[in-house]
Image (cartoon, one colour):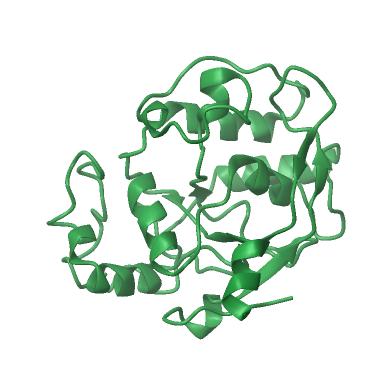
Length: 252
């Protein structure tokens, strides 16, 4: 299933329905798993061109106007100006150097939201042919290799593999923000602290790992635990998600 949103380019406006289920994430105090409900996820990460359209509609998120409390000095640092990306950056490359606040604002602007950490990890564990490739050592080694060669300003969205759900670029293009990106590191439990935005200003602690051999997941959680919500990092971008109930309401 695909849906489209107005104001988003034809290539990257698509979403896919993700059929929910229970999975065992890296973190947690038991091995019973967490439940992910059905939801919609963008097929591709948000592009440079799409984010440019967003800042033109929302001047407060332009590079020169964004408050440092919401976006640090790295915010859109590679752009030529507030309204020009620059010839050295492909407009179809994933947006990066954007803060969590900016990513959240973008998703809200088009009637979507950031995916939760559990939603993102649930989709990210899928290979081309399996919904759950967590124990596939070849798949995990390929993810790690992809983390070593990020080229966020040149490689365009759709340049990595399409997974079981029809989603591209979960690995090997850019890291991606989630709505509760480091909440699990704060409390040890992803289902707590989700609405406590103040916690997202600081990295924290350790996690109770369920799979000590899942090095790719360890790298992701370690990275998330090292960032703050106003950080704008050159290889950190995002994509949007949507709750099924919100999609149904729009169709009505």
